[in-house]
Every structure is written in C-alpha cells, then in structure tokens.
Amino acid sequence: MSERLLMKGNEAVGEAAIRAGCRLFFGYPITPQNEIPEYMSRRLPEVGGVFLQAESEIAAINMVYGAAGAGARVMTSSSSPGISLKMEGISYIAGAELPCVIVNMVRGGPGLGGIQPAQSDYFQATKGGGHGDYRMLVLAPASVQEMADCTADAFELADKYRNPVMVLGDGALGQMMEPVTFSKPPVSVSELPPKPWATTGARGRAPNIVNSLHLENEELEKLNLRLEAKYRRMKSEDVRAEVIDCDDADVILVAYGTMSRVCRSAANMARSAGLRVGIVRPITLFPFPSEILSELAKKGVPFLVVELSLGQMVEDVKLAVNGASPVQFYGRTGGFLPTPKEILARMESVLKDRSQAPCGAVPER
Amino acid sequence: MTRVFGRPAALADVPTHYCPGCTHGIIHRLVAEAIDEAGVLDRAVGVAPVGCSVLAYNYFNCDMQQAAHGRAPAVATGIKRARPECVVFSYQGDGDLASIGTAEIIHAAARGERITVIFVNNAIYGMTGGQMAPTTLVGQKTTTSPRGRDAALAGYPVRMAELLAALESPAYIARVSVHNPANINRAKRAIQKAFEVQIKDQGFGFVEVLSSCPTNWGLAPIEALKWVEEHMIPYYPLGEFKTVEGAG
Ligand SMILES: Cc1ncc(C[n+]2csc(CCOP(=O)(O)OP(=O)(O)O)c2C)c(N)n1
Ligand code: SF4
Image (cartoon, rainbow over all chains, first blue to last red; front, side, top):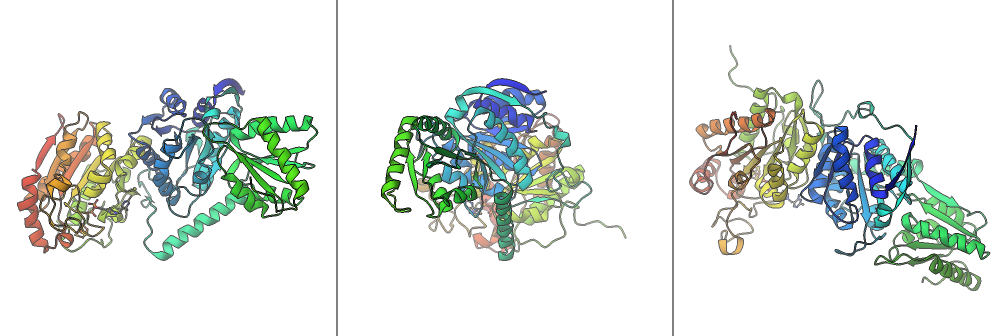
C-alpha cells in the first residue's frame, strides 16, 4: 500500500519525517529550505504534533536539545548561515548523546554568501563543526526519493547511536519535483522503543540527567572514548555508497548529492565516446566510504572528484586512496554547476596526464 | 517527637559546592519546597544553566537537563512541548539569563511558554570570578569594572522583571529577595505562584530573586545580605509586576 506522490525535495523531507514519527519541529526561516518549516507548520498539527518557529537558529537547536532529551523524535532544518549558529547546540547534543535530525540545505558561503546550491559545508558537517571531539552521522541524498529515504533513515540512525544525524542537501534538491514513493507504513509513535534515559519525570525510578559537563578528567575522557567507539561502530555498520561501473573503469568520478547527478550524465556522455567511466557516490559522508575507495585505488585507476566547492571531500578521497592512485579535483562555486561537458573535458585531461605521468605524480589542478 | 524541619524531597541529600553564605542554597530550598508542596516531584523536569548553579542537576531530586549558556528557556520549551504533562522549570543566573540568553528568555515569555523560570540576580558573574554582569549596579566594582560600573561606558543595569512584565503573554512576574526571613517567606510564595500558573495552564511564570555573592563582592556573608538590602533593592524594587486572575 505504498503511495506515489509528486513532491518537492523539501516537502519530501517534511513528509518523511512525520512518517518516521517526528512530532516536533523547531526552525527559523532561511532560503532555500523554507518549504520544510512551511510544510511542517501545515502538517504537524494534523497529526497531533508541534511546529514552533523559534526566535533564532540558536533557540531552535536548543529546543531540539530539550525535546530530544525528553525522548521525542525531533527535527530542525536550516541552511548554511543558520547551521553555523546551531553548531554550539549540536556540540552539546553530541556531548549529551541525544538523538535528533538536522537538515542543512546548503547554500554558498562564506558569510551570507548566496542562495544557490553549494557543497561548501562538507567540512563543517563531517569534521565536527562545533567544538570538541564529536561527529555527526551525515547522509547526502541525490534525489527527491532519497531525500525522503535518508530523512526516514536519519531518525532510525539517530536513535540507534543516540547521536545527531545530518541530512545534507542543497537548494537544487530542495526545489526539484520528482515522484516519491513512501513504501513503509508510517511509524506509530507509541510503538517506538522506549528511551529509559530521557527526562520524562522521575516516576518510580531515580532521576535522569541530560548533561555534557564532566569536570573530572577521568569522566570526560571516558565520554570521549565512548563517543569514539560509537563513531567506529558507525564506520563498520553504516557506511553507504553507490558504486557504478567501477570494475573495468579507465577513470572513476567521485561525487555526492546534486553533483553526482551531473556526473551521471557526464559518464553516459563519456561512454558513448568510448571512455569507461565509473562513479562512486558516497551516501554517508560520515562515516566516509574509505574502504570502497581504497579497494578501487589498488588497481591504480585515477579518480576525479567533483564538488560544488573548491575542494573539501577530495581530502577524504585522498586519505582513503593514500597515494595508491592519482586523485584530481574539479569544482565550481557561486551557484555554478559544472556541466557534463566540463566534467568530460576534465576526465580526458586526467587520462592524458595519466598516460604521461607516473602514478602519484599527477599535477593537482 | 514531631519533626518540624527536614530536607524537602525535591532536594537531593548531597553536599553542594556553593560558597559559605551564598544564597543560591536558600533559593534551591524554596524551589524544592514549592515542587514538594505542589506534589509534582515525579513529573518535574528542571533545566540547569551555565553559571554557579550549573551543578543544580545534582541538587534537585527530579529529572534534569543541563543547558548551554543562556539557552535554558529554549531547552525548557523543547521539554515542555514534547511533554506537556511535565512541570518544567529553569534556574538561571543573571549573566546566563540577562546577557547571553536575553533572546531566549524574552521569546519564551512572549510565547507564554508554560514553564517556570527562577532568575537568580546577584549583580555579578559568579562562576567565572566576579566580572561585570548586565545587572551590576552603577559604581559597583567587579574584575572587569575595576573603577566601578560606568554608565557612560556600560549603560545602566537591566531590570528583567519589569522588561518581561511589559509583554502581553506572561502570567506571573515577580521580584523577591532572600536577605532576611520575612523576605524568604515572600519569595517562597512567589515561587509557588510561578509554579501554579504553569500547573493551572495559565501561562509563563517568572521570579527574579535578588541573591548574594559574598565571594565575588568581597563581603562577609552578613555584610553581603546587608548590601542586597541597601544597594540592590533600591534599584531593583520588590513586588509582583504581573499576575493573572486566580493566580496562586
Ligand atoms: C558560550 C559561553 N560563554 C561563556 C562561558 C563562560 N561562563 C561560565 S559561567 C558564566 C557566567 C555566569 O554568571 P551568572 O549567569 O551571573 O551566574 P552566577 O555564576 O553568578 O550564578 C560564563 C560567562 C560559557 N560557559 N559558555
Ligand atoms: S561565587 Fe558567588 S554566586 Fe557563586 S557560589 Fe560563590 S558566593 Fe555563590
């Protein structure tokens, strides 16, 4: 009894969240994600939930902290400048080990930047962003269907790890309309597994405390090590990537989200020109699909990383490849999307470089 | 033998870290008594701030959350919206509430959140070692106003109770002091009312409590209580600034 609907990416996020049992949303307006809070303000009251427009992104993320600490499935969404404001709160959420979902429909920066699609918040999303030794699990959808699926999965993963999970999209994914199928029946909130650590009122049990303060060295290090073990578990259990035609590839494109869609067109174009092109599309940006890349790199096949930034994910690709094969980068910013033609031209130059230079001695750009 | 005085059930049986003569302890007790007397201990959820009372999560015998500096009203909002059946309170200092957290407190009050806010005004940043607060009196010496607060440089201290009372939504706003027994009794009544307006779903409740910081004021505990009476109360008048019909 699955339903197929035509939806904008941002709306698909909202609907998927509600079906995943999210009954609380706290947000603040910012382009290009306004359809998410707008959708939630319309839909949440229909299912007995609460939509609240906060006074700022700072307040919104701290409302998320409170509601997550009280055991609810809760979400906030924003775009780059607003996500920067949320960073202190996200650090507290990670420290207090609270599950929640944060959507970032990335726009170009730094500063106020622009409102066009970008992937320039990769570092912020995957390397901590706020202060302290912590990570978010980061999902990067590439279609409206995946916006819905990743949002639903984000709630499961957040609960699984008691950790904030970020869905990292951009304005293009948020605005595009595509068919979506909601194949799973909606989650029944009352049937979700209990959260015995949540602050629900200490009735018949000792008080619960939601906290990230640890003044004793031993206590704080214990927390840090527990978090690290959690992040290691994410790496062993929840890495996701799409690997296309990499077995006999002459060159492998690495791209995520919106950029991976353009790379697909570029790969098709290249194939009809006789070039064998593979694609690795990371779906989890943290944990990063490093092992998939390092395995492929053993064959010495060159990689071309394409991003809507001046080179962020490429650092993780290089770490994974670890010199075993050449890694080149191509990126555009300001809201420009590299065209399939531009990518094809870069691939050709990667292959030319490869025929001239020994492995690992390929010029950067 | 009848027991006439004991520890409120809402107060954990642990030593606190407060300095000798600090009135945070008295205020904790009043909050705990109000929770006990309202019979809501098993559905109370408190929010501890960043400041000297950060460890309040160890002192109140109910579920607690520790909030980022100034954000306790937002955290309390999240808890209350998720669990409307809970009785939610925040306990915040003046740096926390009246400086870094002004947006959160004003908007929680403006929304009429069904929460109770206990605002401890000691005219200084206690935990960080006695810096100037938004509530520091003109002329008062602190480690960052070594010549006394200069109104030309730093403006005048903020009267939060009056500021919040200007809003339409709040149900109960009062300022009290705990420098002597008569005032402690009045403070207790105000804190009870601030919980009652929440429990009766009448609206947002807020009590500003004038409190002493002997350590950072450089005064003996008794002198510090006198300083509250002689210097703070003239600038921060006590009383109820807002109540609703049938409050308390
Ligand atoms: C974002 C942030 N900024 C600054 C601090 C440092 N800090 C800790 S307590 C405090 C002031 C607390 O003063 P107040 O709220 O008046 O409470 P008191 O200690 O006097 O009870 C500050 C600035 C912090 N922890 N977090
Ligand atoms: S520093 Fe001041 S406010 Fe803090 S515990 Fe000591 S006396 Fe109380």
